[in-house]
Length: 558
Image 1 (cartoon, rainbow, N blue to C red):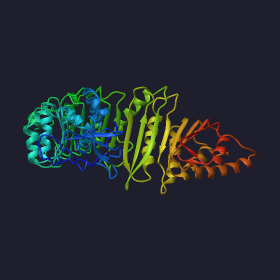
Image 2 (tube, rainbow, N blue to C red):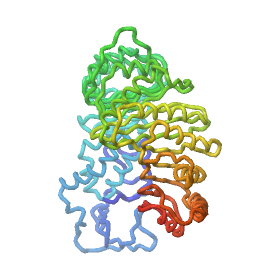
Image 3 (cartoon, rainbow, N blue to C red):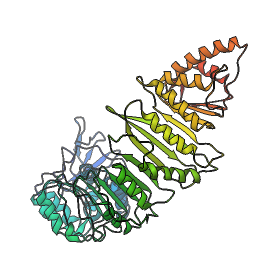
Image 4 (cartoon, helix red, strand yellow):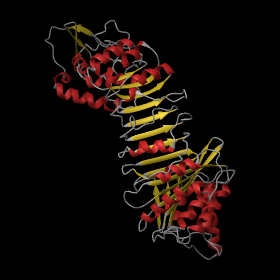
């Protein structure tokens, strides 16, 4: 159903003259009591009087050229008013389904809500009688609107968002804490946290809590939230005990500097959550546990993220958690950590890489090296994606100084090269590994990778530097007696480059060389695939003479 464009309904609630209904008109929109069809002539009833409105009626009211005349004709129902109530409710639920997610701002949710009400009085009445659609509340709403929503939502579980602070609105919401299902809030002061500490939340399933005040709280929700399944905490410590945190499906700890649990306590929580699918611990000061840890098998885990942790903490956690082959793993060390390629802290990552490589024997895997720029910082990122069915990816990220990321990349190439041999070699993906200041590093990386993975038969280069791409062709296909890298290469993919520049320059040199050698010789390559960008028809013709299979994917030929 197409939505009518309308001005925003502010989250602090409409200015209503009555507490029994939403406003009839918001920002100049037509009265929800007017029956409007969406096409053709319109018949509108105002206070029992039927009038005819021309088809030029605008959303904001009658346009200047519209004519309104009295009519003695009997009232005609527009098509939308003949839809059965059950079907109208199904339409409304479908329209509001996306807006009911936590990713949608409450203001946008009630904007869509208002648009439905403005279709006709009948739809407004139906909507007001659907309590499951009145459950989304925000602290930015007007107190009167919160009262109305609490009344119309009846006993349905509530979704609460926004910034909690002492106010009459918070007092009203706390009276309904027994109905909270989702609490996605930041807390502005300690007194509000005190309120959360003493109110039980028997229906709470999803807690997303941010509190900038560092000291931890020893209890939340009076120690009773038996339905809690999703816990995302940022900035503050909470009650780290299995009495509150058990049977979790998702656990995220972000930026907790004070009050973070030690590794032993965290593992106790994990041991009581066999259905956990997401575990993310990032930039959090966990403390090491002195007791010997028993390995925990999280058979349902789909994503494990241990990011920006001290190396010893990362190792202790990774050693203690046993995960399925299908789990996606993301490891990254604390910024400023010095790269130590022989550090024992890398052992869990090496073990995971070895396990994935062994499972990929007989199938095509991919090893990706890319450099990510973040202002003045550069990060080396390595991803290994196994080719076996139901096999997750391994992602490793390490902050490096410009020009030193090749040390990280070569380390992982060496580890893969030392794994059990695979008759189907891994594909190499090289992404943004050169720039103006360090363009030669890209060529050096290729030479290092060739040393450990010489049998590679597929390489993808994704780089915006046309000079680097041109150099790649020179060292892959020298055309003379010089050493050629990756002699088994059969598929070369060039992505997102300025194709016209590198291709024209390289083809011109290649043509001169071929003329000296007495004719054109095809490249030792089965497929050259070019993705994205633009290229000239003349260059396409030249490349077709050099490779048996030239593939252009989303390339504009000029």
